[in-house]
Structure formats: C-alpha cells, structure tokens
Length: 188
View 1 (cartoon, one colour):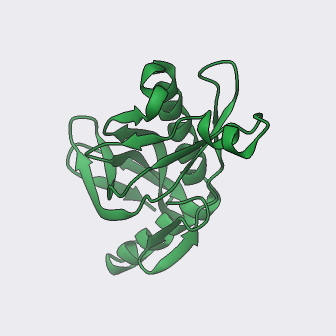
View 2 (view 1 turned 120 degrees about the vertical axis):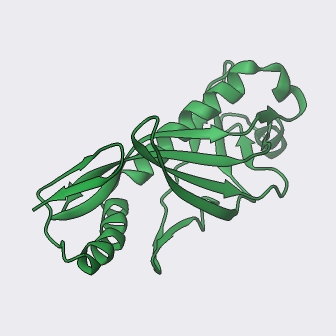
C-alpha cells in the first residue's frame, strides 16, 4: 500500500490505487505523511449480523516504519525529514471497511460507509508527545480510504466480482438490493 505501488485486486483484476499524501497540522506547521513498507498479508470478508453490514478486514504485515512524515515547509532536507515524526502502526494492523451493498450498472457492488484503523498508532521520537498527531492521521487515513474506495473504478471491481456470482445463480440484472438479517436480496 505504498503510494507508488498500492493496488486492489479482486478475482484477478488489478487496479492501482491513487493514494494521496496525507496532510495534517498537529502543531503550527502542516506535515505530510505517506505509507511505506505496508504490505497486505491477509483479507477477511464477512457479514456482521449485529450491524447488518458486510465487513472487509485487510491485515498488513509489520515491517518497519508504516507512515513516513515530512515537513514540506521546512528549509533544509534534514529538517524536512526530522521535523515531522514518523508513525508506527502496531498490531493488529487491520483496515476495517464497512460495506453496504448497492446496485451498480444493473448488478451489485458495495459502497464503503466507514473505514477504521485497528491497531495503535505511535509517533516516533517526540511524536509520542503530540496526541493530536495520531488522531489526525487516523482521521485523514479514514477520509483517504473512503475517497479511494468510492471511486467508479472500485465499484466496478466489486461489481465485476459480484456479476460472476449472480450469473452462476441466474440473476444477472439487478434493480434493487437490500440486506436482511439472513440474506442479500436482489430484485430484478
């Protein structure tokens, strides 16, 4: 999930992710953060009957710094790197996506309703003294993930995956979709 090589793959179809830099201002200057050394190791897609939503948990490996900070307004190269503390993302390192089924191109897709970072964010160096740093990062990661996963490209990927399932059940065209406590209802 690095900003240069992150992608989403569903049923063999791969789409590169356009991750923007994360901008936050925990103190007087704006700092820029981006993911580095973050690799997916597992995914789990399940239905939560308590909330009546689908959940996609994406688990990542722990391999060094996860969020690299830079102070773009600082003058020297060393200041740019040192002033904005890096942030580690501790276990369980899961992005939890809450998904709602929707109709998309006469089939079923999913709308991302919420994204939650599971695991503790810890600022390195003096970053652990700035509580607004990790709260700010959590907020902008949520906003950026919702932005990325609500694009037409992502909806189409979900749609293509669901279309194969619907064809196998002789249910190709959908006009409405609803979720009940025990089933996903698709109406033609």
